[in-house]
Picture 1 (tube, rainbow, N blue to C red):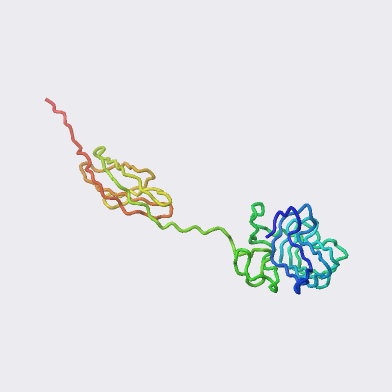
Picture 2: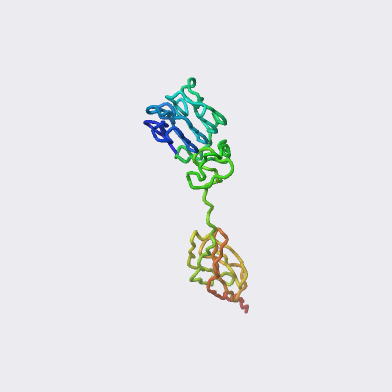
Length: 271
């Protein structure tokens, strides 16, 4: 991956003096940004007399280069193959546009590669990128920049599209702690007030379920509840359990009981 180059070229291809000097393959790179000081992102410039003879530039993405993707000081050759590259933001694959001999095929011009977030240097491909499955298998690396295996026709650029990179959240399977310190205080002949200590949870407690004599009677987001409409002079047993947003429920608390007050009838004696 080459981005925001400000001096020199990203890659300079030269014939060199070794036995492999004339032979080059440049495949599956991502070039991003306009170098204002140079034309092109790849330059072909022979040093000495050992010319670049066999050159393959394929499966690359060039985004918003200066003038052209390639710049050649050499006359070129029919064995220079520029193929299946996506070139965006410029109108020419090679500069000069005349006088350089090369073979061009399968290049995609003027289509946005649809990077995930190029402003923050994330050059992974979006699902609708025109670069997906447009590469050639010959000379393509077996793995992409992340180490993911390239299969079938490779994608253009440094990254193979493998779907959304968003991390799948780990399901919350941890239940809250059971409420502690449940108390039941008689308020009248028809009401009992409950209170308890808050439960804890790895994510957060969403609320509490209140049970009377084993049956669910209410839910509440607070650590208290007033149970009204009760029969006088009657004993009631309560428990409370906590639950979280994922639906995990705690064990029920230790029971607490209370007896509503007796209703006393006061009769007026008449003489």
